[in-house]
Image (cartoon, rainbow, N blue to C red; front, side, top):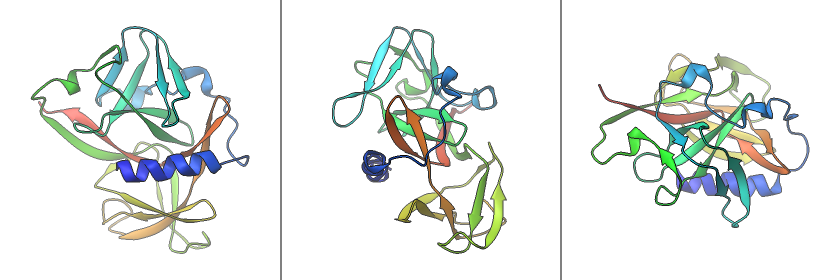
Length: 194
């Protein structure tokens, strides 16, 4: 997943224009009520998250809550947007957070969740729609490969779309401040095992 994130970051640096208006920025990318049952990090103090170049990617305030992904080896917070999501690496050694899912020995389960309604096409030109994945639908593992012209090939392995193995989806650009990030429509989320 880290290799994919590097690709996403490289694409984010290249992204310009064509993205969504960020008029739902009032939530600062925090977890929506529909996904609040997954693993979260609650910030116990104001904090700045950095991008790979060392610049501030996101400023969070005390009490803000974000979904976690990449557990247990590469924790990252999920910035949630109406058009998708992206993840930012989380330094658990320095970030002031309360996150029960990061406790030693925490038993976790996971599933992949769609962050936006997603039309899946059989062709790279996005002409033949074969199914629609509804927002917040959960399913099995998903892989991505960037094709070109803001199109991803998705490897669904039958986890979504009535057994469909592969398809193509459009990428989105999520603006945070003056930086565009390529939005990911489906991310792996975790829950504490009961």
